[in-house]
Length: 463
Ligand code: ADQ
Image (cartoon, rainbow, N blue to C red):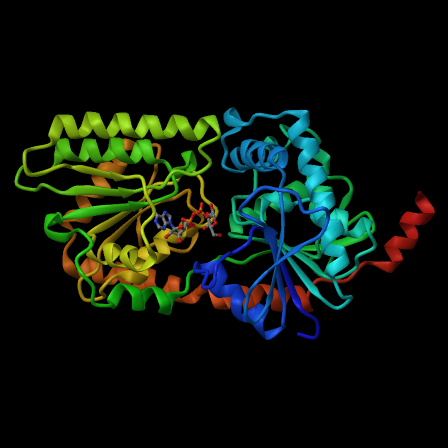
């Protein structure tokens, strides 16, 4: 790579030793190019238009500050109460206000000005996620002609839902300012192409790019993965039993942020239904680890209350003095304990109603002992299900279907578990996160056509 890699995401990894798959993945690419990661400081405040440099080794970390109003209107408001529910097929939860929309545009404009002053002409710019969809348009307006790529971590919305947005036509226009639009799955690519196909401003070119006014863009899928070797190592290390003396003999695990897109109430109901069906000698548990997120948003408070209610009902009905069927833990667990828990679990439940990829599914598979692996129960609406077809695929809207899958997972013969795990692991290993980031950077650097000069001239003549 000739220039630097400049990454922009809403969240900036903080601390001396930040962890997480994305951080591991981008660390190498950023370090090799002496690059830069730009993101919001975790504390609100004022930055007077200047980045704050966060100490780091290998590459630069630059933070901008969101004011309290911006946190409320841009982050909780437009990003998480409009774009998130829209992309996760919950238009009923979309809550639009002019203030939030305006603030979202303003934050993108302000961050674009700060980013533009930091860029060198041959830097590659990689923007992450729905918080910054208009960022390329704002950078172009400031004269930035660097290659800019966007990776959307969440599902691409269905065409009909786009008309819910305050300015639906702007969505395609904003995206077309990127040289490369990276999406999680082939299904997402199909929905994105459908949007462009429906738009009279877009033209499909023979080199697979899309001409949109005077710009060219490309749409590709890059299924994100995990740090496979790191996760396996964590799962295999000797450590105390995370449960201490009170561990269940047989349990299924769920690990999610407490988000309505993850399908948790139906998962709990399905476990309750399974308890009705199970052979009486079996006393399995569901260990659900779900730290609260975005608690300022009403829909997130509702889901917390609903799950507490369901846990109470199911435990009240089935628990015995020495057995609590659902252990609902509203906290984060550190990565190595989590890896260990995955390895001990007989099954993992991923029951998302919509999900860009779902890394928990990949982590669970990577953490298993291949000689005695657990079984992944996987919603067919999680992006990961597009490739991981050897998991037990379920319909997360169908409680009985999921209850039967839980029963099957707990009773599955060793040979079948081994065979399914082997195939699922191949999918996980093929999408290692280091390969994912290198591939995205490579495609952004080499493949998308640059701005189309013939069409610039045509556009200027026509306008
Ligand atoms: P998320 O919606 O956050 O990510 P997911 O892909 O499952 O969902 O990633 C969650 C990560 O957080 C996993 O690494 C998991 O181990 C960790 N985690 C969750 N709960 C935890 C807990 N209680 N304790 C500790 N760790 C926990 C978004 C999209 C996804 C997409 C990812 C990556 O919504 O669809 O897969 O980005 O692109």
